[in-house]
Image (cartoon, rainbow, N blue to C red; front, side, top):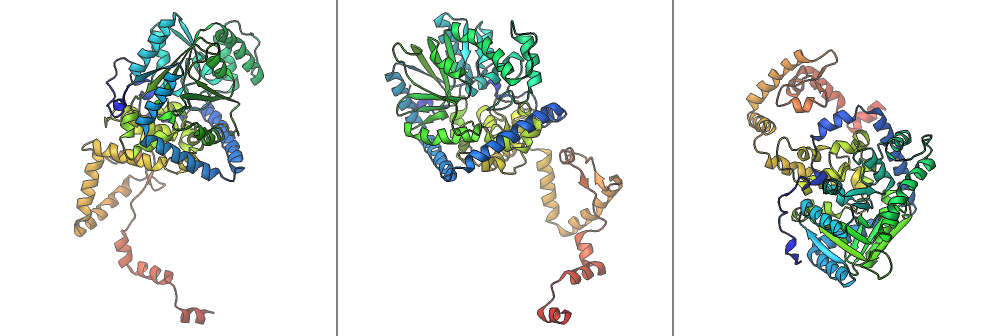
Amino acid sequence: MSSTFLGMPAAPPRSPYGTGNLRGEQKFPKAAHGELRNEQLRSNLGKATRTIRAKRLAVTGELPDWERLRDAGSAIKTDTMNRLPELLEELERRVTERGGTVHWARDGAEANEIVTRLVKATGSEEVIKVKSMATQEIGLNEHLEAEGIRPHETDLAELIVQLAHDRPSHILVPAIHRNREEIRRIFLKEIPGVDPHLDSVPAHLAAAARAYLREQFMTTKVALSGANFGIAETGTLSVVESEGNGRMCLTMPETLISVMGIEKVLPRFADLEVFLQLLPRSSTGERMNPYTSMWTGVTPGDGPQEFHLVLLDNGRTAALADKVGREALNCIRCSACLNVCPVYERTGGHSYGSTYPGPIGAVLTPQLAGMHAAKDDPNSSLPYASSLCGACFDACPVKIDIPSLLVELRHQNTEESGTTAEKTAMKAAASLMKRPKLYTKAQKASRAGRLMAGKDGKLSHLPPPFNGWSATRDVSEPPKQTFREWFASPEGQAELRAAAPQDDEGKEEDR
């Protein structure tokens, strides 16, 4: 396939799974409001994110060249985005030379159709899966089930989420919102033949999952995976994980199908030296992932004898065309930004309504799925799901300036949204401030708001269009006098004289 694939607008979705899990059900503020009531969720998230943050700081702090590694990672990803068409064509050539087959998917619907066709060609009605954000993004599991193919998640956290008929809430730790007692109850209900006396000791829970998964590994002929990195120079794909279940998926089945977002390509094999230091330290707080698997095409008599690579666009070329927003495509899915985000820690991943939660999700999801500037579009609210504190920028291993990207998306959303109550109010305020006499009268008239204030001097509810502001914060009542009135009064002049710095002669006399 030629590089004309890049730069082409994504085809309209042709199935209910076209945008997969990139389209939320409700706007972030409403969803977050509900999640904030879940005390158990907040406790689970708080404990988990604090632990991961502490581990990350420890292992990054021991490297004297950590900042230089971040600079290198950022430079490599920026270079990759600048040369993406040629690198993808090189990756296709190398994979094909090593016995693999490359497929190009403009959107989630096309990727789902390709994968389904490939699975059905094997005659299998089941597949085992390595944890994959790309397949979650396009809703592949749901599509396969609708086609009569049963997917089995093998990552422990993904398995917990699947058995609970739940949704992932974290990029790295999908079941971060569940504690061990909740997991025990899920296993007792959903795993056939599990010990009815199973307790909540982590080792015992892992053993129960291992016994359940072992049968899937031994009997399923087709595996699905994502890819953390794809190397254009050699055609090599890589997956990093902590349990070894991914290694089983990548080596035991007869057919392996990998779905990879086009932004995951790297130019050279040597680039892994940088990213295999950045990724584990930023994600799990480890110096190295316990399992780093790499495969290049097909090797006769060793591992899967049929390999397919599905290169997924699904809005990425549209993001690439945005000179500002394209920086988000540098993301290596480490989740460091989630673990330091005060908004995510309090609301959880489900509030974002997307495969990609947290700060990077608030940037990436609107770019991939589009905000459409629709008043009722959930994605239009995601760029506002941030305090803009900058912690995500400080933590990002490839130095993505997420706060600036969020501000830019807010700007784009505002510009595309047409006439709104907020714009009308701002225009009215601008017109008022141009006329000093009228502005002074308006200031005096605002004192009537003191009648609406409570005993604490706060206004809890403002009338439209200002009710959006007071919906999440109290507003102080208007002052008794304006600044100009105070400045002109004897009391104001006396305070100004008292606050004015004394000259040297006065200071000497004081001494």
